[in-house]
Length: 200
Image (tube, rainbow, N blue to C red; front, side):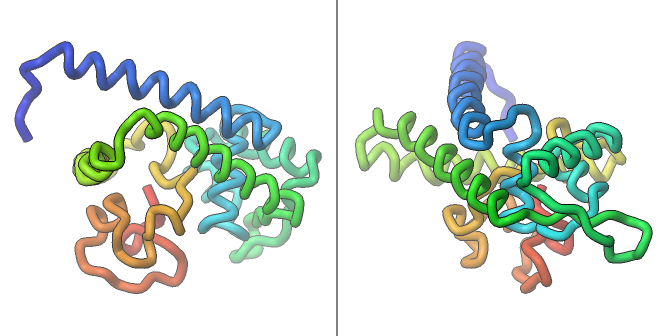
């Protein structure tokens, strides 16, 4: 990996990421009716985590144990999730209600529309050229995050795939750059994972 010699380019990328992040977060929170980690929790439960323990959920969305309990309390009070017995008898499992599933679908749609609104400024050719660059950057970002985990650190913000639309990223077809970076050899998992690990 080469070090950037263009501080303007790095700054432009940071500003773009901030602006896009603001727009997408606003869309997600509006669709969910809740802020902070709620949209990510709903989407993660919808896409790959339904029935997981509160501890698993907190790792995905990047919360402390007490923060995850408060989040589940809030989502439960809103009728979006239910609690049940966990797999080991000591843990508590979290599952989406019918209403929670509908809200998670709205979050995914709002997220997609916010992203499409940004991409609308590009021509079809520019968008086609952008895709391999996005895949390359996601590959590098995933590799860096996995290296952090190998050193015993937790990457900031939870897992990369916590708000991902698995059908859009074509994960099942092996087209997801995050999954392919963490799992070079395609092995069908029991649930969507990254090389024996769940999505990062």
